[in-house]
Length: 107
Image 1 (cartoon, helix red, strand yellow):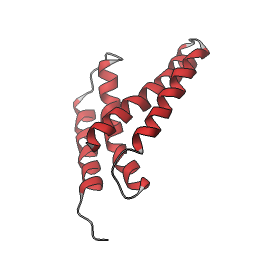
Image 2 (image 1 turned 90 degrees about the vertical axis):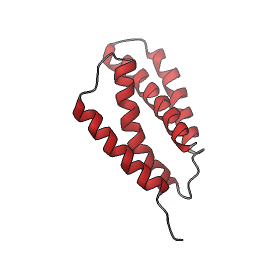
Image 3 (image 1 turned 90 degrees about the horizontal axis):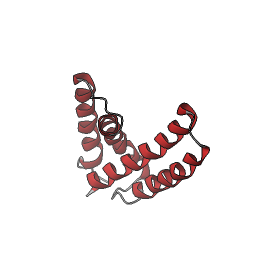
Image 4 (image 1 turned 60 degrees about the vertical axis):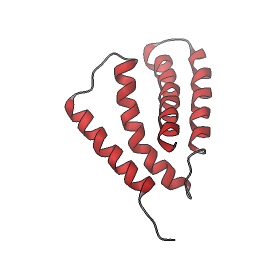
């Protein structure tokens, strides 16, 4: 379930940031900030739903998923295909995220 939450959080964060990109970099209306802020609030809420004993661990693992989700956004929304190095890098990051989140720990 954590992976699904992370993917949803990733798209919420990227959508929020992209709304600001559209406003500030593409010269669109400042009204884009409102859905952007709502999307970023949803992102923050979703990260609290990840089952982890510390926020730092949940956020660290999210980093790898964010990178992968960003490349998916680039492909699906912006129409640009990630190159093999971006895909390879994302795979490495996902492996690191899984290690951070799911590694056995002694407490």
